Length: 247
Length: 247
DNA sequence: CTCTCTCTTTGATCGAAATCAAAAGCAAAG
DNA sequence: CTTTGCTTTTGATTTCGATCAAAGAGAGAG
Image 1 (tube, rainbow over the protein chains, first blue to last red):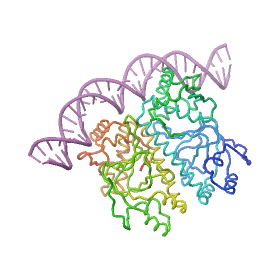
Image 2: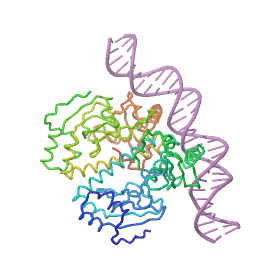
Image 3: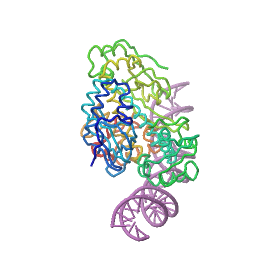
Image 4: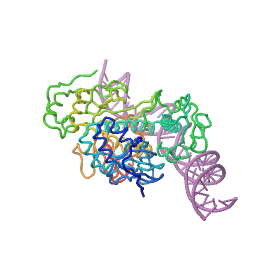
């Protein structure tokens, strides 16, 4: 089910708990303590990591890969409520059951901490709690941004918004950025995109085809996207000038 | 614009900052400090309390009345992203501009604290920060619950869900509860409901009429609602048995 | 009481996205 | 190379909610 990554002490630049997410202002002792505590788990694409309602005895942050948070109604309608990218945090200090399904959409590596000791550290270390509050507020903003999208945007605006988010996120990583040109691979299937946007997969496909026909994007295969002009794409999102905060 | 409520020391049972929201576990000194800090502001129905982008130099919690958080696109489409009921908290420790419009939908009284001293108290008092994290996580859950509604529910399910939420919230306050029967007044106009649910006001009106015709609810005037059988209403929401967490 | 203004209901029509259906593309397995 | 089992695209049709339009219902002002 899950294979453990070697968890001997690694000086892991990409481990967000240590280096970005939680501990930016912690002192050396606290960092060491976190370092001792952490362990890695990895998952295959498509694997469900946590089922809604499960007991959650750890918190974690994404090191590599992409996961989704989603909710499903009895009749099978599902809505994705969050996208977890590297450095994003999973888990609820103070809660013991998961509220959503967490599914790996690509091979995934997470950096985990058992919840109990992590919570104890939180009590002793106000910075960690504060940082967590900050991150939670960011997530809340993102969720509310998404509510506007789900409630009021057209299918074309929805797709454009999602592409813009991924493009921006990737643009900061990839090198393919020159004068508004961005190139990236979609990390989600059409169905996952539909579940995120509150659409059907057919509508997603059609709108992507339409954006392609109109020259807003170029497609190579099913996943490889080129945005020749980010401003043009942004115009399609319906957002005001400086756009969404999301992810 | 705003008239101040006498802010001499009041032993205010309904003031949530003091008695419920933030300070359940604080000791006497901290409570006194909060007590000294707080002041009240009241607003008329329809008044905009905070504009998105405004500088926010206070945090507050709702004592009486109802307010909404909403986002508006340039072309006027608006989506409500939160409903503030008594005891709910407004404001972002660590942020200085408001992300949403806050509008009073009924006469409103808020218990306010200047942000700076409140943040300082937070630093000294871990309980307050923790409580705030807990509250923020609740809001996040609520927002995500709403994402499912916005993305995947039908108009009828949306209306039923909103009615159920208000009914449940009111049921715990009002006396009109006997064997699943709940009576309450809608605190929102049809338009506000539409903005919350991602619908038009005409659709809201039509669906309410339909629920009435089908005996799921009874209406007296425009606002006064009787739910003869909560279970029946819950069946209409599309939620699984124990329903939403929202509000 | 009547006028005005706002909120709400209801009707007729339209349109965007859902649904139903089939074909095309592609990768892994045999 | 063919088969199998996806994911994706495209087409035809339907439907739910939006839009356009008008009438009813209160509440408050004069």
